Length: 202
Length: 99
Image 1: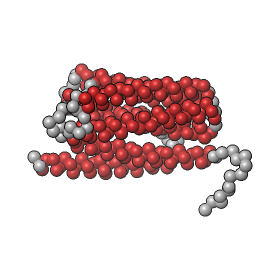
Image 2 (image 1 turned 180 degrees about the vertical axis):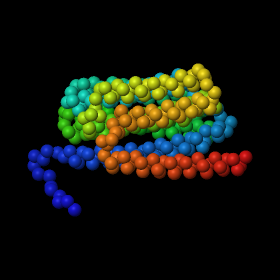
Image 3 (image 1 turned 45 degrees about the vertical axis):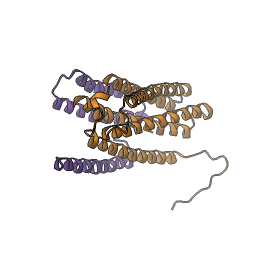
Image 4 (image 1 turned 30 degrees about the vertical axis):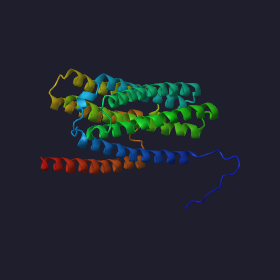
């Protein structure tokens, strides 16, 4: 057991080592999230032929729409990278600028996804229609919920940077949020490669 | 946080690679230029390479990544292989036997 030193007045905040441990902890969380997503992918692959009397994948997936969503997410991943870069280089206003760009691109992605979901549900292809659609809405909806949470995180980080400045805990939080955001873009690669593209081909 | 993993050059390189690996599968699915089996192969290859590109250029995974993080990703990989592989094996075996 290491000796525990209580926080004294004027403590400089978490040490570099503590922040590294938090990075590892967040990394472990991302791995558990990866397991959740891969099992939702497995469920989708098992279920996608079970269309019952409902529509087939090719009837409900629109390639242009999905391409636009993919571009929004890929560009937002790069703009978040620029925000991280600015924070490492202590450029406060640049970091805030790139985070705002990221959130605008994220909103573009979520808006397209909501339009897609609402359109499908209105045309009778809601999640209760068939096993295929249940698995589709669960997988893509879980990803969308993660992106929405990430955008709330970005908003919180914008305020933290503006109010607290680029202190080392704030930079560390921004770094972990960046890991989360890039991870979601990786999951999206799986979604367009396993869900949408085979849907157009089969 | 490694300073080397935060450079504009690295980000732009990653972005160009990721963009190319996204455009290729969308283009071949859009044009239907190849037979279905080959198209599936190209989609799978592009996706796997792109996951690697994202991990390296955006998440900063390289030879200087702490061993704990690498072990965690390997362990998650084993769990995913067992659970996803097992699920697909059992369910498609069942599907064939029910035909």
